[in-house]
Image 1 (cartoon, rainbow, N blue to C red):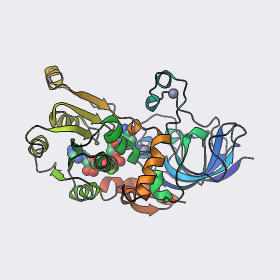
Image 2 (image 1 turned 180 degrees about the horizontal axis):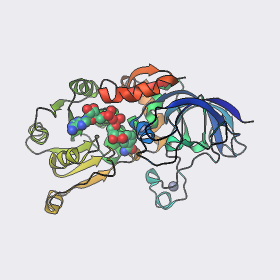
Image 3 (image 1 turned 45 degrees about the vertical axis):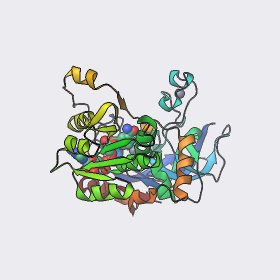
Image 4 (image 1 turned 90 degrees about the vertical axis):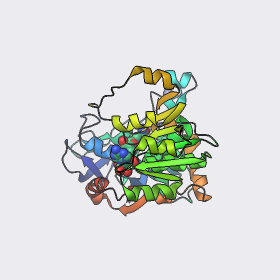
Amino acid sequence: MSETVRGVIARSKGAPVEIVDVVIPDPGPHDVVVRVQACGVCHTDLHYREGGINDEFPFLLGHEAAGLVETVGDAVTHVEVGDYVVLNWRAVCGECRACKRGRPWYCFASHNASKKMTLTDGTELSPALGIGAFVDKTLVHEGQCTKVDPAADPAVAGLLGCGVMAGIGAAMNTGNVSRGDTVAVIGCGGVGDAAIAGARLAGAKTIIAVDRDKQKLDWATDFGATHTVDATTEDVVEKIQEYTDGFGADVVIEAVGRPETWKQAFYARDLAGTVVLVGVPTPDMTLDMPLIDLFSRGGALKSSWYGDCLPERDFPTLVDLHLQGRLPLERFVTERISLDQVEAAFAAMHTGDVLRSVVVL
Ligand SMILES: NC(=O)c1ccc[n+]([C@@H]2O[C@H](COP(=O)([O-])OP(=O)(O)OC[C@H]3O[C@@H](n4cnc5c(N)ncnc54)[C@H](O)[C@@H]3O)[C@@H](O)[C@H]2O)c1
Ligand SMILES: [Zn+2]
Ligand SMILES: [Zn+2]
């Protein structure tokens, strides 16, 4: 039996979001209906709204969510009714060329629900990142549900579903930050601060936070930064070198998504070090630099998609570390809001005083 619930959609490019009735179809054999308890507001939701991802309007926004499994399709074995889950956008397929070569964290054919949620007139919705979770209930593939310890607050645990996992994974998985490493993080929003928390968990000895906003640098220190650089008044590359015995950092994580900050990351790195790009650039941005520098400085220039995470491996572990007091995920939640405040949360992203607004249902 299909049912109708409230959800937040972006109907057309740039238009304010709206709360509308969303029809949830009966789950297909491997689909699951999840009652959403909390969903963070991510920059990517705003990118969808602004037409920066694709033109498949209307979008059902929201994708950093935790909730309870309410209904399961006939063939579902991965979760049961009542399970507490964090939703993910990497439901590993096991069949694509990346999976077959033993690199499932790149999975190129991640599973999604087999049916579409719609408006009441039958118009199909495009769920953000294949999830769509600013809604009372959502339809996803069973593989998009990762069970975690129900002791974790949904507003906190849900953030692992995107930005926080992207940041932690950029440090721990893509950057392979190891004991004794020096690390710099450029851009200390939710993603950058998560990279700082990840670098600390991995045993980095020096963690340098770079941002243009003083409040952000204070928060970065709370997450484990040992040094801070104010990019509005200080030379970022020189300062990172100064804090690393003149050499540059072993791993520099770019969490802004701009050519100038990527270049800073490149030159602030020690010889043969690693640059990780986790910030998402826009299609108009280009890089122009001497190829000889890429050769002579060596090392690895990597991009990090979703922190190269494996949700089934990483979410439960990170929730456990959080519950043990070793990963302060609760600090990412700046405010708890209702479904009708998503538009206000987009505005707050630009003022800089929010790490994450979380819709609580
Ligand atoms: N790769 C992925 O899988 C993935 C997943 C989620 C988000 N992201 C991307 O990560 C990026 C960061 O996301 P967020 O949620 O933390 O965004 P955010 O807007 O909260 O944070 C960006 C931070 O960068 C700072 N900043 C801006 N310009 C700067 C400059 N020139 N120098 C230093 N600091 C500067 C801002 O003050 C802000 O603190 C975005 O591009 C987002 O799309 C990537
Ligand atoms: Zn795959
Ligand atoms: Zn996101």
